[in-house]
Amino acid sequence: MIPWLLDSDPALRWQVERDLAHEPPEVWEATRARIATEGFGARLLAHQDPDGQWAGGAFFPAGFSGFSGEEDGQPWTATTWSLNTLREWGMDAGVLRGTAELLAKNSRWEYDDLPYWGGEVDCCINAWTLANGLWLGADVTSLASWFPEHQQPDGGWNCEWVSGSRRSSVHSTLNSLKGLLAFETATGGTSASRAARRMGEEYLLERGLFRRLSTGAVIAPWIAVFAYPFRWFYDVLNAADYFREASLHDGTAPDPRMAEAVELIRAARQPDGTWLQAHRHAGRVWFEVDVGAGEPSKWLTLYGTRVLNWWDLESRI
Image (cartoon, rainbow, N blue to C red; front, side, top):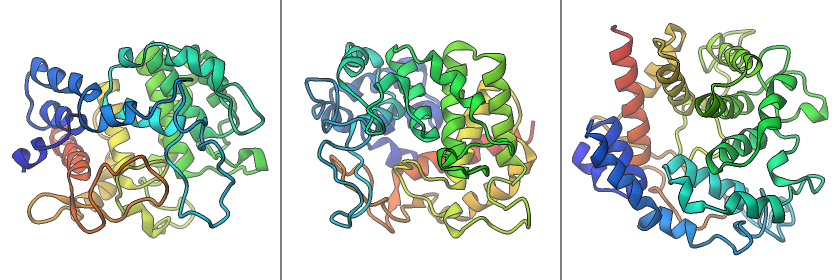
């Protein structure tokens, strides 16, 4: 399986080399450096506009008229989605030197025409902006303090809080946690941000990552439906990989309350060690980066193998 995974785009290959093949840093760092000049990374960079944006918009492409049924799903081509992708692939921020300044000057949120690096009201958007800003060197200090101030009483977050919601969403909570972890990794965090992250993690863990706290029932069938790219969607593989990263950052063992969720991930592994792409999240893209539904996905196989290796090793220590 490892040779199959290594025969891939540099954005994926360097992670296989580091996390699964355990190559020395000089090997995977050299592969990672190729992201800017080869394959997916170079192709996505080529779509950046002179003003620093992608597709002429912050969260939606310029001219997007809303979900009118004229196109299938949400478009994934605008600035925030493109930055998310390049950052998650491991692109060196130096390649995008000057982008933070260009976005500060030229990009405004579709919501209330707010300035880009100040964020807006959506938890997920603010989490991605926090992580992207830290990566590119923008001043996003105010966004780090936004999350403790907007945490729900149950410990998580909900992007619909502005409409009055007082119950958290697993989607919003996971994305918020990723932003807070990026903040801690880059800066050490603050006492408030660290406490908020712990509360958010507890929100998911006390539900075993996929059950309703009130009844113990499965939240929804999609919790074990795996599709790459993850986008904003929650599933137990996406959540477990967050907890893997948090565990490595914190130097802590896996929480045993994840055990049942990890077995859902293990159950989806095929006899040949791969994971299948369940579907593609509908919407406009610059180009496809993974296989179609029903085919073995190298991206999902990286994530699934990485999670199980971490769980099986660390849970025995």
